[in-house]
Image (cartoon, rainbow, N blue to C red; front, side, top):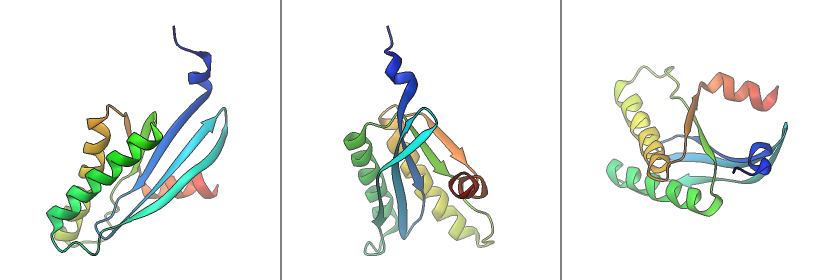
Length: 123
């Protein structure tokens, strides 16, 4: 039998993917109110290898998931304003590493367009 509290409260990890800097936030949602639990950035510039960066993204997001036990992940979809295919490929890989971390912990994933995320935050 599921507790009624699980219907009223959930923890969401939000991820803004990036190859140099990846942002994240942890929210507690109770009813229609949101409370920020934690936020931060994962600095990746110091790693020269793109593959090492992907490993660090997976490692850090997995650690964040293990620490906060979110019910779901919200991840920002890549923005296609940059026409450089190599940049978009790297960004997609970074997003994939974060998604893989959530999948490895059986966390449901929801992808949102950047404009929709900004509208939800700023109103």
